[in-house]
Image (cartoon, rainbow, N blue to C red):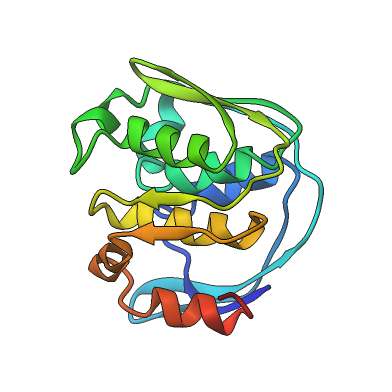
Length: 178
């Protein structure tokens, strides 16, 4: 997967560090500054991933990415744990429960805590009906999850993705997804 002209602001790329720690093969090339912001091309190659622990000082820069990292954890070997993320319980939705519910409906093994969750992987996800609850992060996580799940996944309130990424569904489809 090649993502060109991607924003690389350090406050938004903490998820890449976590994925690399898990074993993801991520390379950043063509780094430059455009309109005062760092951008570049991200190249991702499929690779086996291992569980990790996400906690402490790294959590504030990952709050918005924890749902997609939780999905990645379903495909990593071992138990990935997210801690110190209690603020996710008071966002647009209780995002900890929304992530856990969505992943459980797809067959993942998820345990929740007051301040986070733990996901055991790898898990062969299977399609089901899930509900974003109107949270754009949950809608997009479910859309990506549907790509690795067997069978059909129906996402209720999928239009919520447009809040932060109006072209999300078109871009996902462009990756040969349906």
